[in-house]
Image (cartoon, rainbow over all chains, first blue to last red; front, top):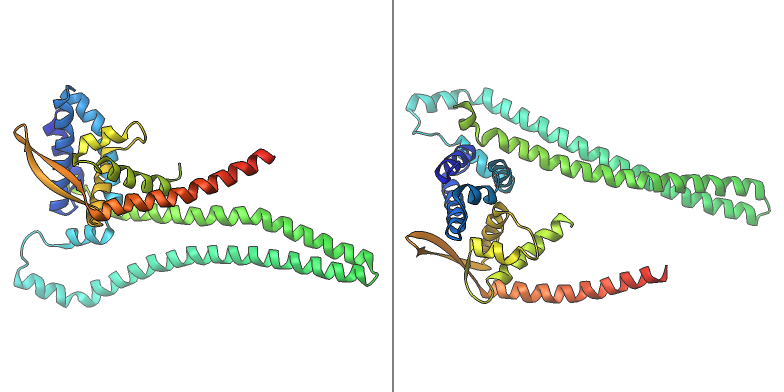
Length: 201
Length: 105
């Protein structure tokens, strides 16, 4: 692959991003390749050092805000005709409500996910609270001269404490998982828009 | 290394590489390479971010019959480096405290 092929392939894969962003990036990579060639590398070597196209595309997409990508893709390629505008306005009760419903579903799923995390942490906190309560009650029983009941309460407290430690790591893992998932979903949504022209062609 | 930490360090490394004189993309990568590995796309993102934060300025100049972008640090960028030094003084003292605890065990 020579430099021209590399750049035009990259351009195709980045289609869907704002035009200025694409041309600025292409200039940047072109300069990087030229500088390496100037230092004595062959064109091929220079291109392979600059990185794979997949890598560049995924880095670019994850660093471009979703709003920017959507705006670029929603923008019509040519001026709309009068009847098209009329049709869009007339149809708005249908596509408008569908759009709202779709966004609401996505939002609801997201909230549900976080609600689960909140619930998990609530369970964790109640475990800790019951562990403390059991220990306190057990101590009171022991002081009042009922060692068996006291030991039972302290024992349950220890079990609660054990469970809370166990669940604590689960809670952290689940929270991290959701954050990671959120990033992946965002990347997925962005990828729907970016680079599709090339794939179709 | 933690991603968040690495990102912060790379920002300062890029600023440090243009601290004394203006530099260009490939040279920045080469200067940082002995200390941290950085891909071109990462550098691009960092340069954009630093430019947005007014920590550096960009100018395009001719070089061997083609165009090349040169990056120059601003006062805000220099201040970022100074802040970084102060932050790390604290971190180093925390590090000493943490490793001291290790020796007791």
